[in-house]
Image 1: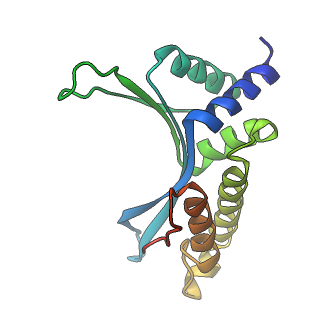
Image 2 (image 1 turned 180 degrees about the vertical axis):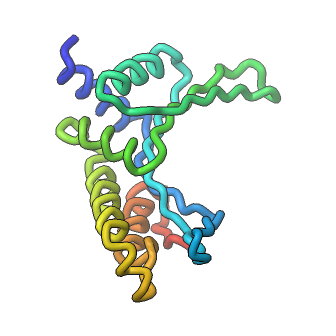
Length: 166
């Protein structure tokens, strides 16, 4: 199977079994200069009980040069349930590289991917000019970053739309 077909397959798996979102880190990170930084972390996850699907996702990620983490969950209270695999692409670089590769093929989660990529690009600009931004009291949690994260979370929300609580 050629790479374009693999990426189209992966986009279908993300549309059906995946999640494209933003995690708000509750643990502030202290920098050398003493300021605390709270973080918004973009991520993509795929969860499935079929190990072979997760292995195929790993193979495609390896082809496009994206690192991942895999976690196996077993419900010990309900031993009749199948084990569940989750492959995660956490951190801006991993999420961005994966989303840019599958973007042409996404359908159902295309808007979430666009918003996450916009957030990553916006944050890179803040970091690029971070020494200037910090002098003027800005952080990675500016209004635009928070709005983009809220938009992604609202697209993913079941039922009522929710606000990001910071």
